[in-house]
Length: 107
Image 1 (cartoon, rainbow, N blue to C red):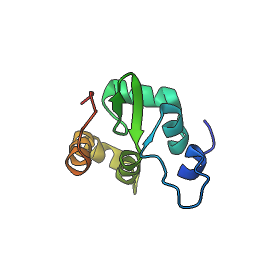
Image 2: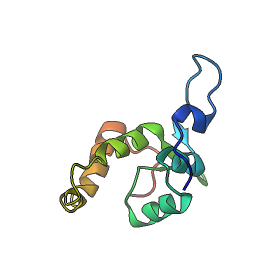
Image 3: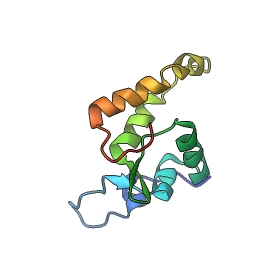
Image 4: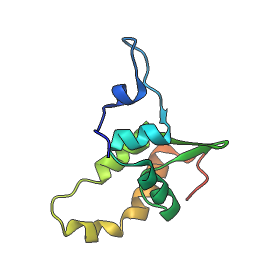
């Protein structure tokens, strides 16, 4: 796995006051989460993981969706994973409600 990087490092935002991109590529999203591209692909195939969008042939991850996924991944104890497993689809529905689904082809 690669070393985790902040959004500014992943997107190479240089000018002061410049806007960070709203969407990250697969490679950028994997680096941002400190996970592999293969893990992201497996999540997409299984219908789990962070929300993604498809623009033409390009797969993109909204930064807001990655941050939401991170916030929903917090655990206080090991057994909590079993409790949270049933909420996976709920998390996806919550994100759709808060951020919309435009461009997303996978449910």
